[in-house]
Length: 235
Image 1 (cartoon, one colour):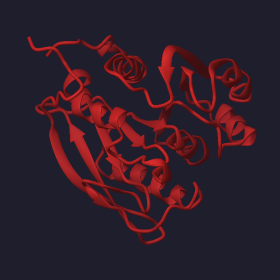
Image 2 (image 1 turned 90 degrees about the vertical axis):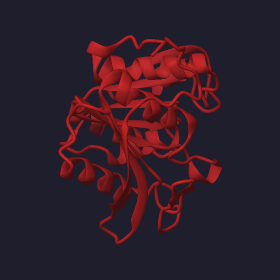
Image 3 (image 1 turned 135 degrees about the vertical axis):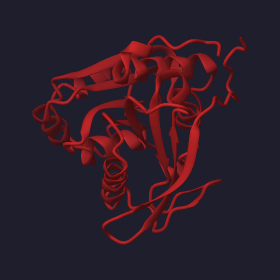
Image 4 (image 1 turned 30 degrees about the vertical axis):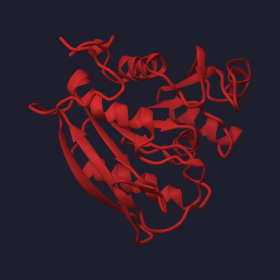
């Protein structure tokens, strides 16, 4: 069997989609589903900061879409938040520093509900973790996985609200993160009493390298569909 490498794209049903926000914007995205069966759970992904180059194709999210429908029976929804462009296209509107993006998160969850996608989790990376913490407390959401959370826009009040909401939250915090490292992360996540802060040795904010990506995807699947964890390295 061939080894899964950084450029591996495994079989899936891939569909270009549009999301429609309550404030009248159209956002572009892609839904990836298992090739020959129904998904058992769903990742709605929230990308890093678009003003620093983040978009729906940011590499960890793209690799989740390329691999997890086949390896873990997951549906993966990726999309560009307002004003963000990628090879898929540009979403309408303009970046709003996490404020108007609340409509983008809601539109993604409404799409997941309309398509009857099962067991929805939010997978946020950097800026996307703040969107998840601030705007993701929706009854449809069963939990959060946060990659490199900077806690830039999310407040202690947001974390306390998630604690009351009661859904599981896992934060993967790189040892050498540019914004928030494990020791400080444990302190700052204290109001979110059920948060699991997972330090990742040797990793950096951008999760560069196949070893970092595999660690992230393994941790995600262990929470969302543990029956398929650990992930294989060959296919």
